[in-house]
Image (cartoon, rainbow, N blue to C red; front, side, top):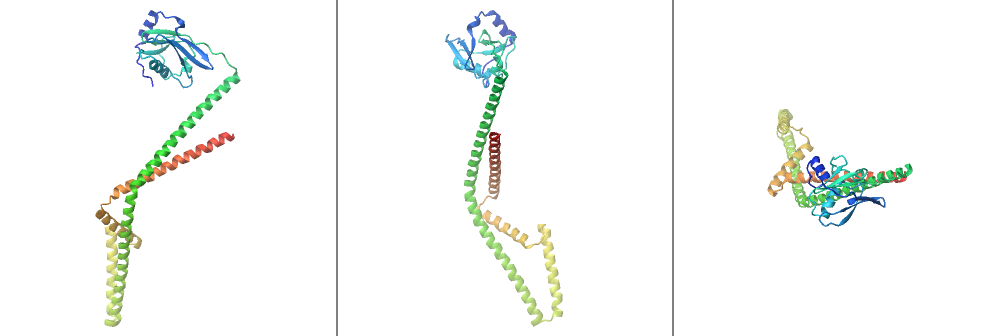
Length: 303
């Protein structure tokens, strides 16, 4: 991040540039072990200081920030091209050191001459490009893998937290489900008993009290009344009268009634369950991504 204030317009800097007499050898650029180093005199301490530059990762902004961190007396700092155009903070130092430039510290301008690199052979240049590409890919893989690992750990922590919140709710829900299931089953057995009593009463009236000629219209109207009752159920519930649907509906009625008595928050429980399902799905995708990345790395190693 470039935390350095601007010096103002280019014309203002150029006016100081030509009004200040500074020796050309005040700032020197040398290469040692393939890395450039910039040596300059700090304005406050009046002593020489050498800054080793990483050309691939260092930028103009980071270099200027290093200057300010080293000498608190530097209020403003900027870098201009030889033509007087200010260099952006995001410019890589490797690009900057290709040509001469001007370094403005406070109100003093320095002309910096960069030594020319020796032209290497095509084979050496290709090796260097391959090495840079390999380092870039390695950094990307390690960075993404670390990010995915942190994402996986965050999801695991979130899942554990959701499970801790759901554990007491699951116990209460299990008790209420058992109670509702018992009441629903009892209601079904009561319906079977009622139908058995109805069939026995009709048989007793048919064979012992009256004859079939008298009971036949009675059974017809009873069947018609049952049909009306089933149609009324459809109009009220908008569901077909099937035994499984009736059982499920009655179970839910008993369950919600019991939840109000137990002060069980059904909406909170459903929300926690949805969050847990989403977290597990996200964890599954992250692990699949890590697995695919490992497979790609194995294929690259084989190739």
